[in-house]
Length: 143
Image 1: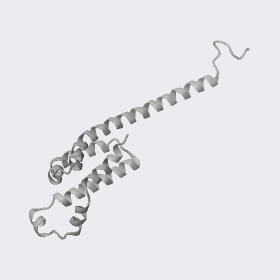
Image 2: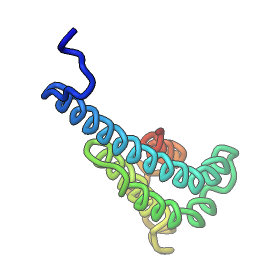
Image 3: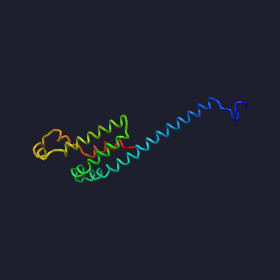
């Protein structure tokens, strides 16, 4: 057993040490990124869920959206900084749909509300439930 001696340091030992260190470091970085994304998703959900709960209980949709949309939008922008790739592009698309719906439904002037009720974009927006749009955003916060 001459090949197993205390004090022998071979190239294989060095390679194993370097490979183990690199793999451990890469896994630690990946875990850290997942952890920060998870924490950001929890914060995003804390802001979104109260309004979603009220909407699902059929409370006044206009009041809920008007009072919480700005907060939802800012929380979504903060959360989007933790996403990348396809998740980020899908989340941005869902957020744009939510913002466009809100502008169409509640960003109208008084004259548009009373006199322009046959606008096809407005009529289509009326068919969409805000809970569907909000749940689409929350789909990206499942970590």
